[in-house]
Image (cartoon, rainbow, N blue to C red; front, top):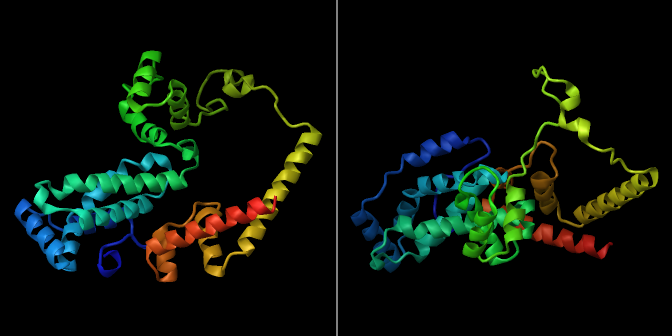
Amino acid sequence: MTHALTLPALTATDSLEHYARAIKAYPLLTAEEEYALAVKFKQENDLEAARRLIVSHLRLVASIARGYTGYGLPQADLIQEGNIGLMKAVKRYDPERGVRLVSFAMHWIKAEIHEYIVRNWRLVKIATTKAQRKLFFNLRSMKSGINSMQSSEVAYIARELNVKPEEVLEMEARLNGHEISLEANIDDDSDEHYSPIAYLPDEGLTPSEALEAKQTEINKTAGLTSALQNLDDRSRRVVEARWLQENGGKTLHELADEFGVSAERIRQIEQKAMQKMKTLMLVSR
C-alpha cells in the first residue's frame, strides 16, 4: 500500500516548519467521513480512500514524534517512522469495531517510533527485554518530579514495570546524564579553584597504557575501513553519510532524495550494510 500512495514527505530542502504547515492543510475527518472511507478501502481496496485517511492524521504523527525529541535522533526520521506506523494502522483498521482511527493508530505510530529508537540510540543497548524497553519509554512519565527518586518511588516503578530496582536506577542515570561544566563560569566571581575540575584526580594513562590504547584504536579503525571497502558503493555511501560525519549525519529523507528512492528503501540498505559490517569486523578480530 505504501509505495502506491502519494504523501507529503520531509525532503532535504524542507524544514519541519514547512512540513507542519503542509500537513495542517489536510482537513480532519468527521466520524461519518472516516467510517465511509475506511469501509471503501477495506471492501474495495480504494487507495484514494486510504490516502485521505492517512493525510488527515499526519499531524497526529508529528505531535507524537515531538515527544521523542530527547533521544538525540533526527525529528524528520522520527516522523517518517511514525508515518509508517500510521500506514500500518490504516491497513489493519476495522471501522466496524466502533473505535475512531486516531485511538487505534496511536499504538502503531508509537510502536514504530520505539523500534526506530531502540535500533539507533546507543544508550538503549541495555533495553534488551520487553520489560526493559517498557521501562525506557515510561520512566520519565512515571517519575513524580525532576529530582532523584526516593527508594519508595524506585520500588514502586520496579513493581509496576516488572524490572529490578537497580535497573530503574541505572536507566534513570542514563536518561539524566546531562553534561555539567567542569570549568568555572567566567561570569562568576567565585575562585576558579572551586570549580569541579579542581577536584578531579589525574587519571591519565601511563605510557604503556596509552600505547596499548592507541594500537587498539588503530586496529578498530582498520577493521572499520576494511568492512566499508567490502560494501557496494551505494551501501558504503549510506553508512558514511548516516554515521561517519563529524557535523551530524544525513537523514533518511536526504539520502532518499539523493538516490531517488524511498526513505524506507534507504533504511533497508542501511540495516543490511550495518549487519554485514558487524559480521566482517567480528571475523577479522
